Amino acid sequence: MTMKVAEKDVLVHCHHVTCSYGDSAVVSDVNFTLRRGEFAGIVGPSGSGKTTLLKAVLGSIKPVHGSIDMLKGLRMGYVPQVESVDWNFPVTVLEVMMMTRSEKKWWPRITTAERAAAEDVLERLGLGGLSGRHIRELSGGQQQRVFVARALFHSPDILVLDEPTSGVDVRTRHEVLHLLADLHDAGMSVLLTTHDLNGLAAHLPRLICLNKEIVADGSPREVLVPEVLEKLYGAPMHVLEHGGMPVVLDHSENPMVGRFGGKAV
Image (cartoon, rainbow, N blue to C red; front, side):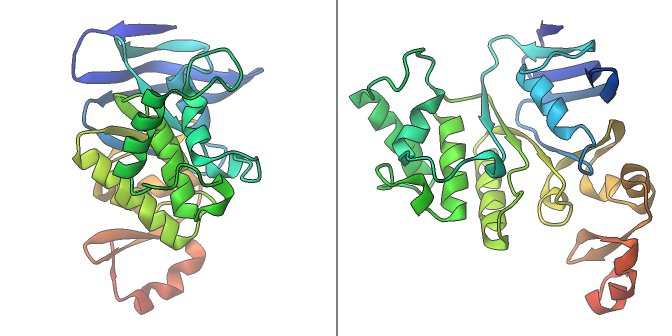
C-alpha cells in the first residue's frame, strides 16, 4: 500500500516493506526515509533486492507487506540501466527525450514548445546541438546523459537511477559521478542503486546497505567497514583508507595492501 506523507522535507518513507516473487521474499522488512536534498545509494551484491526495492519505490511493483509513503504530488525522474537499452534502435536524442510524454498516441508530433524545452535540458547537461543525432552515435557518457536529461525533462523532485555505472567504462563512470554531484549541488534529490563500491558508492554522502534486508545505513566511513561488508557480501572484505576515502578489497586482494600505500581500517 502506498500512502502520502505530510512532512514537506520527507520525499519517500519505506515502512516495514517486504517484496516477493512467488513465495520467495526478495526484500524483507525494509525501513528507510529519504528527505529532500539527500543523495543516497542502495548498495549490495547482485540478487540482493536493490532493483526490486527501487521498483517498489517507483510504484511499478507493490509490496506484499508494509507501506511506502510519499510526499503528495511527488514527481520522479527514472534512469534505467544502460545495459537494458537497445542502442541500435533507430531513434534520435530528441525522440528519446520525448518518450516520457503521457500521450497514449504512438509517437505523437513533437511541438515547438517541447522541442525548445528539450533543447534547454540537453544544453544544461552539455549535450547542446546533439538533439538530431542518433543515440548510437554518441559516446557512453553522452548516452547516459541523454537518459538523465529525459528523466529531468518534466522537472522531477527526485532523480532515481538503477545501476547508473553498470556496463560503462572508467571515463563514463567518472562523467556520471560528476554529473550527479553537480545536479545534487544544484538542489536535486538523488536515489540510486549500485554494486560499484569504490567507483561510485564510496563517493556518495549516504549508503543504504541491502542484502534482502538493510544491513547498515550511513556515510561511507560508517558502513564501508569489514564487519558490515562481511554481513553484506557473506565473505571477508578488507578496507583501506587511501586519499582520505575507503577502498574496499575482497579477501583475495589482501596481498595488494602494501602496494596501495594505504592503511587498513
